[in-house]
Image (cartoon, rainbow, N blue to C red; front, side, top):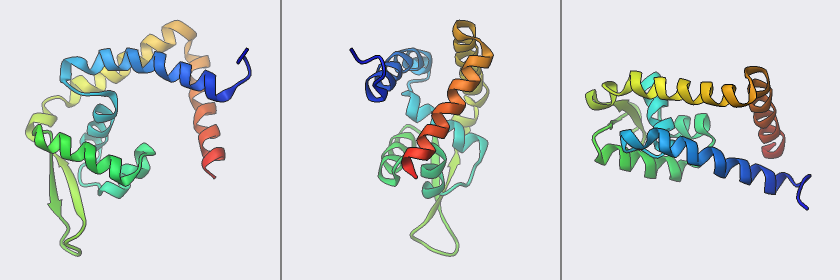
Length: 139
């Protein structure tokens, strides 16, 4: 019935993938979106929330909520910019730095798991197509 419906099929795929990613990041006490945000902060310390929002295709308010949660749990610290006291830079704490390798390894394992299921070529093509579709739709 919905074989050609982008909405139905993309959401069904998202639910299936979310179950797998949720289970993988559970040992860290992180949801997949929190884990992705923390991975960006670990890879590029000092980004501002607006930059994180762009990188993760999230709204600034969502990023702020995630940062509040990660800060409360001791994973990130926010520092005011020297130029404008209203803006902050986000840095990982020592606690987060201690998880860096494990978080990245989990991401690699998840990619490998998907490649084992559908193959590297199809995985790469699918991700590329999804990114391109998002860019077209968002303009």
